[in-house]
Image 1 (cartoon, one colour):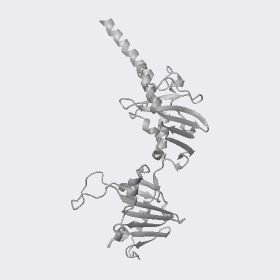
Image 2 (cartoon, helix red, strand yellow):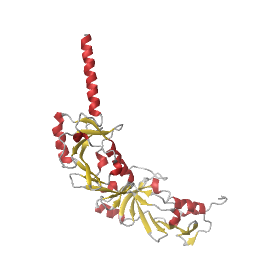
Image 3 (cartoon, rainbow, N blue to C red):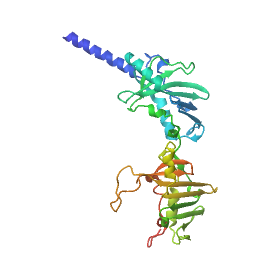
Image 4 (tube, rainbow, N blue to C red):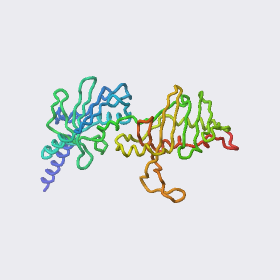
Length: 345
């Protein structure tokens, strides 16, 4: 009985060591040409190419640290690129795919994997394929390829990031809009010369804030076409400070044309026009979005529009979703600029 217990203990110990060896990134028992997914020196990366089986491709190029482009057309989202580089650097082997499962996993990779190519200058230094998630959603099937010969490895792996349980396929997105920078505009306040806000469906609130030179303000009441006589200059200065780094939630370029045209031919809620010191303008048209849940107004009637989000057209060509949480502080009426009686500032 005692011998059986020792034997069982020995089996468990050896099994634990084997399990640790399989999971350990950099395990020398697995040939390097099969397991060398991670790239420690991400600072040397100059280009990343991502392609799926539906012929969607994304090329991320680094101009300088923190400045990447998408498909040579748009500025890339820094947070998205940072997340991708983090994954590239920290990829680790969770387990080898079992012999019995290899055939199915390789078939699935062949039919639906995303190809990743990583370059240093013009030299391809990493190439691998990213498949779907494991049944527990805590690992991702991947297959390495030789960057010199382009030949695929014979052994797929389950990959993960130490300390995280997410699967990694979404990090390697092939929709270029997922990588594009989502800044609507960003102004240094003294560079703004005017902000006009038209409440299209309620003109009595409309105004134009003018700053002909830094920290010199006037506000025009667009309903009466008369300047505001009791202007609160502190509020005017505060208002312009909000125009830095204004971002939106998502692009809507893939919306069906008929639906998009229906929205854009409707009456907007607000139209904002910003003019800078170089006389360049930025125009935003905000449209009501259908409510995503039932909410009541003060009279107990269902709200006509979503209280959290709006459709927005930027400079007549970028159709996006904006949030009231972000833009609400800009959509104020003329009363915001009127100095309150008895209040000293």
